[in-house]
Image (cartoon, rainbow, N blue to C red):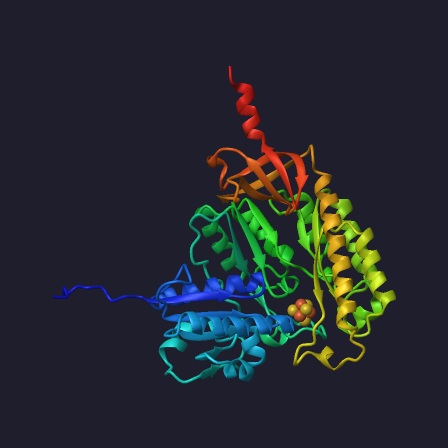
Amino acid sequence: MVPYNTPMRKKKVLFETLGCRYNRFESAEMAYELCKAGYETATSASGRVDVVVINTCAVTAKSAARARAAIRNAKQTHPEARVVVTGCYSETSPGDVARVDGVDMVVGNAEKFDIGDVLSGSGDETNIFVGADMPGDLAVRPVTSMEGRTNAYLNVQSGCDEKCSFCVVRLARGRSRSADAASVAEQVRRMSDAGIKEVVLTGINIGQYGSRGASTLSGLIRRLVDTTDIARIRLSSINPNDVTDELIDLIATEPRVCRHLHIPLQSGSDLILQRMRRPYTARYYEETLDKLAALVPGIGLGADVMVGFPGETEEEFRRTYDLLDRSPLMMLHVFAYSPRPGADSSHMADVPARPVAKQRSAALKELSALKGERMRGRFVGKTLDVLVESSYDRNGRLKGFADNYIPVLLDGPDRLMNTIVPVRMIQESVGRLYGEAEEKRSEVSLCP
Ligand code: SF4
């Protein structure tokens, strides 16, 4: 006999997130909304699942192919589950997504946070929920679970007012809008109270942040420094034209603002930058990096670079390579151009042949490895503050990131987890530094 008070089984939702950090953050926000609507998130792909949400990306042709493969895989693994596809691929090509076998619903970027209502209000047939206007303000949503986490992403801006010719993200995300500064500060205080040590401020084009109470990104960071106890504030990617003197000064003078910026370059040729409609010149980019390196010693700098853009000659690629080679960058994300339907550049002629783009990409990846190794080597024998994560690497060592985003492995007791410790660097190897917590050395020297 079934007891009267047998609880109803909660519906389970599984998230598959493709693409950028921003998508990862938005999946967490959707999970939060679905939990409020009575769902629970599945932590593994095995077992019964009622809904699979695939949060897609549309940056390259490969991203779309990956999304289609994820949809097919979700339907095969969970034939009874409803497959909901959202994200930039859904927003830019809803018809294409709906035609992929196994899709039950297509949800746009403006609708994705109403996912609870969307799911409860629809039948079994394919439904497309795309095309609503983006809201004028950006809501700040708490991250789903902060337990056991050392850092958390906080989405403070969405959309973009630039018009880069290769980009469909701006079409998928609408005009720039920002989260209210007071709500951001309140959320950061909650994160800090929950034990989070580092907040990573994210956005589609975070340099365009501007809201009541903090009209610039620097104003927002200043407010977080002054009104919260968060130990570290890190920024996600920011365009070079948005790296202001005020921001550089904050990074240089506020130890809680991480000495780390990821600044997309895309090309070192002014001709290509113009065709890309990027709002800066190669010289401006270089001067910005040089200023940062001079005013913020030890800063970790990264860049996105695109090779094989229409019209990129060998000479133009050489300009990119040389600029990167003499720069203080330590890490490059290299992308090979692929035309995206809807992007203005998709009509441009003279796309370099695939093998040429591949070769250029390989050369830059090699350069990136070399520059990273050199940068890390400079810190051997020196001490860096490391935020130790709450899990081990596969060899049972503690791991973490220095404030300048160098990955570090160290030996030390478990109690160092989720703390920021000074670590003396001993050796550089395979993309990271190995070090010893200074706390550990002083313990040894105090022993009788
Ligand atoms: S800055 Fe350019 S590449 Fe970045 S989101 Fe805006 S339009 Fe796209």
